[in-house]
Image 1: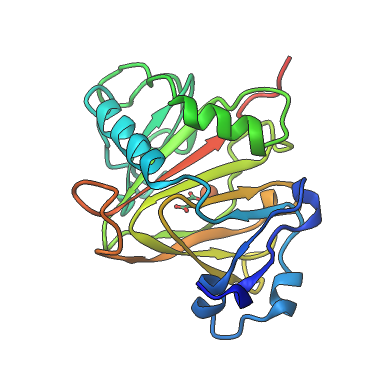
Image 2 (image 1 turned 135 degrees about the vertical axis):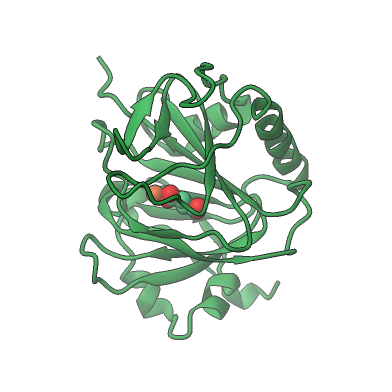
Length: 241
Ligand code: SIN
Ligand code: FE2
């Protein structure tokens, strides 16, 4: 990886400065430049390769083990009942769920089996402590499973009361093209290729910005045994007492 790509890739609200190789970013976006990076929202942090291969494999294994009691299910949009193209499960005391009847919300149990969501792996608890800067633990860790055909439309995470807490996400398996825009749906978006082991933190202004995944690159990783991509998203839901 050429050293020429090494620049600061953290905006000032994001806590301690992190640097990393951003050549994937530069290669991925037709118009990327240092100026584009400067227009990223404060509080956005990208930690490429935060987890090594052994840790990635352990996380993928923990998810597949959890899926024996809280299987990946097909969530549905509120009102229309349209199926999402990802399947989902969760770790933690709360899990993010959605269905036609009750819409987006957090629940303590799996919507189909009624089983409690399992405790998150220690690697995630440690990650949250290291990067969130939040004085209370995360409560929900949503696990999204992407196939080649899956997408996540541009959205803002807004089902949490604790919007002062960053959202911390981990990518495992196949590469994905992540989009990060601004607080307005029509704001310019940046594209970033996320690889297995990468961590993204949406804190500060970035916490209120549109983001999504518009492409999966199949066959680009062997970390997930059956292929595809797993994304873990940690969130604090309630305001700590
Ligand atoms: C999300 O924001 O819901 C998922 C982001 C990702 O898959 O990287
Ligand atoms: Fe999100």
